[in-house]
Amino acid sequence: MDIFDKLPENYQHKFARTNPHMLKNMFGATDLAPFWIADMEFPIAEPISQEIKRIADRGIYAYEFDAHNVFASIVDWNKKRNDLVLDQKNFVQVTGVLTGIAVLIRELTQAGDGILIQTPVFHQFAQLIKSAGRKIVSNPLKIVDGAYKMDVDDMEEKLQSGAVKMILLCNPHNPVGRVWTKDELKKISDLATKYGVPLVSDEIHSDIIFEGHKFQSIVSIDPENHIALLGSPAKTFGMQSISNGYLYIPNETLRKKIKAVVGSMHLNHGNAVTTFATIAAFKHGAEWLDGLIAYLQSTINWIDQFLAAELPTVKMSRWKERIKYGSILGKLASPKRNWTVF
Ligand SMILES: Cc1ncc(COP(=O)(O)O)c(C=O)c1O
Image (cartoon, rainbow, N blue to C red; front, side, top):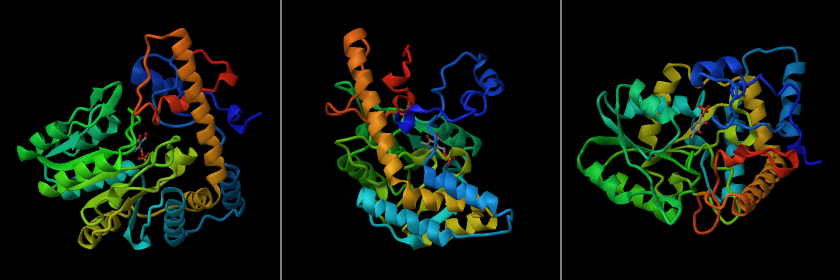
């Protein structure tokens, strides 16, 4: 049996996605399929759970920091998996990706400023913008030949108006699943530079990439001007409730400014479980992740065949005849689990 066919023990009703109290509060019902949140129902990689057990077994939880090795493990990981050369000194640790975005919004824009997002996009982006007293400027994605595309002309129009003071990108995009190409990223990057607005790229989903596609970080396009939220193990390794967020800011002036703010609020404090679990994930989690991606790819292929055979009027969003990462697809079970998809 594939390790991804096994549900972890006590899976039901313990976590946000299936917690009846939360579901009732949020959706007014409890009999819902758990596709509303981007987390997994797979047992995590053995080296991570072993490391967490090691920390727990020590029986002592004194202050302990090891950001150096966390950043080193993220650098190595990105070199090996994405051909992406990063520099350890450019990281700023925060308590989560959303915390990082919230800090950037507050530090790089003013109350009332517009922030451009490519809708439909992860709902928390809108919440972060509104709760900081900024305005949402929507740059809707277009569906062209059955696939989602950026509307670069619309983006430029909105930048020209002067109302946009930050672009918040999601790459790969949650929920439409596009891994933005180098060409698309270059266009956005050029526009951000032309109109002098910071470009912030949430790259939390960058490790779940299917065959035929390659993730490009925004900082590989223009390191001096852009900021990436890169290196969170949350989605990659199913560590949502125990992970930090990592800002990557190559521009020194900007990095110093953000680091000072984050430090002044003590948001850069890791904890030992997170720290060592992150290092274990990036150092020893590759084999597990390859297995996960292969498993999800076979699930996607099965859905594809199922739709063609049984529900031909239902279309799956595709890009260049290849299926991109989809957060919902990622959570559907394999045919082996015998689920019915409605
Ligand atoms: C695009 C995106 N960014 C950020 C998050 C949440 O990140 P964190 O829990 O580190 O704040 C999610 C979770 O679904 C997400 O999909």
